[in-house]
Figure 1 (cartoon, rainbow, N blue to C red):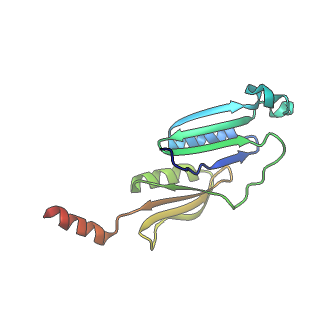
Figure 2 (figure 1 turned 90 degrees about the vertical axis):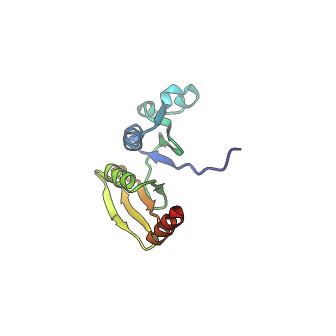
Length: 152
């Protein structure tokens, strides 16, 4: 049974291909890109300078799905109403992804341990997208309890 899934959709001002390639290089996975020129019904409605822009891109890496396009018609203003949140499976993964994705961007909260038992950090990447990375660590008391139970 397919479940409801939230998929972030990003809109860029002409650098979608570059941004999505960067995200693929950081996150891995399969990237598919279709330009406006590749779609005759849409291409006829687009100005010549937008023809090579990205009509639709999709990045799939495991359970991660990220979609994007270039606006094709005018300017997009990046706001602060959307953040991309990655829940990382390990301390090594969060450190690696934070370093890669924040390169050339602005770190707004460095990776640090939090009161909710996670490692967490935030940044705006070089393309103006806001990111939040989280790694839920097993609480020390839980870990000790699990070890005690496993020993019996």
